[in-house]
Amino acid sequence: MPQVSDLRHPIIYLLRWLGLSALIGLLAGSASAFFLASLDAVTTYREDHGWMIALLPLGGFLVGAIYHYWGESVVKGNNQLIEEWQNPTQLIPFKMAPLVLVTTLLTHLFGGSAGREGTAVQMGGAIADQFTRLFRLTSPDRKTLLVMGISAGFASVFGTPLAGTIFALEVFIIGRLGYEALIPSLLAALFADQTCHLWGVGHTPYAIDLVPAFELSLFVKITLASIAFGLISRLFAELTHFWARQMKTYVRFPPFRPMFGGIFIALAIWLSGTTEYIGLGIPTIVSSFHDPLPWYSGLMKTLSTTFTLGVGFKGGEVTPLFFIGSTVGNAAAQLLQLPLGFMAGLGFVAVFAGASNTPLASTVMGIELFGAESAPYLALACFIAYLFSGNAGIYRSQGMSTGKF
Figure: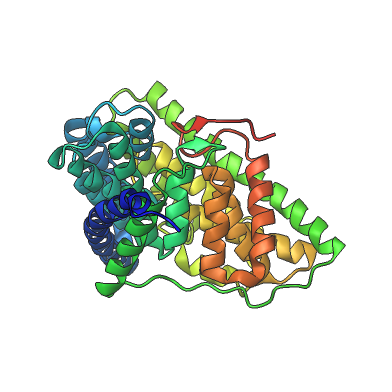
């Protein structure tokens, strides 16, 4: 039988982090709810007023100017959170939260191709870190706070608390999953997810209608498709960094980078005659589970999003990665004669796994979104995509614990 003294420290630990998790989850979940509602509003406005896309260069200048004049200390975004966890030196300024919120909304309002995860994670991390000074926490405790903020932001923006928990533990160092903040991360994710729901903000449902029975040919087909998922996730990461390097080399004044980028994006939209590859792309993601799509849809979204983010617009990468993965999976399903929804679901999480170097979180996200029946195939796709994605992830500040092979 355990002694009372053996239970005292775990109980104190649990109660201590339970209170902080509830507080951070409430604040981060509320911030995500406001962000998601605002994002829906600006997206609807842009879709109803197509001429807004012509103002994308102006929107780019505003985004660049905001960070150049007021946000240089938080311009690294997600990478700054990762760096502070790896080597805690300076409190994350609270202004990271409102600046990334406003600039992401501007990006979507004028027609940039970006996501939302980066915004929610940065808001959650910035909010959580403010309690370091308030409660005079130690450096190890501060690292736990950053994990909680990231898990709360991720969980609430996607409605996946288990994936948010693991993502926040897995994202800092490639090849290592830290358990030190496991319970606080889970609690913060659960509180944030429920808070978002209590505000009446929902999430897009996805479903895999048919999961094939296992056979050797299915294993081979999934393996081949997953290699493609890994390669395109690597292409996404490297293209994003490529566009950023080119802009920094040839455009010295930071506000001009997204402005000039906005000119090219607006022209591309006008010449192509379609807005399918801007914004979040949720309708196309949903369609990829049911309808055959052009084989090039994923490549077009890759070019659109990597250029948007590379030139300096703000937002996340994850929802565009879902778009890319589900549409590439859709194309693979047509080529390999497999169910559309099945392959779209595998691509949905596998491309994210490869680009973010978080295969466990991606697998769990797939299970939360699509159900446990497809779990072995989801894991296979995520792990193989992770293996073939190389070390050039979307988060440049990730550390490396061990090699991938």
